Image (tube, rainbow, N blue to C red; front, side, top):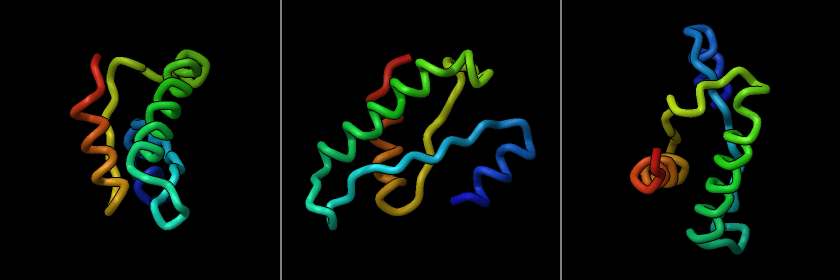
Length: 78
């Protein structure tokens, strides 16, 4: 995952990796989804400080993270 962030950064694209609750830790999908929603709020809050365009972003992930990022992309307004 670090390699993806490094690749994006080398092309002028910010990559932010987010840790989230996982079912094997006793969590459920709602917990994981809430973690990502909280992370998105945090990113928006700090976007100017980090020199990010908060209106121009995407989601990506692998395995369970891919599923969650797809769901976030479909349910996030703006």
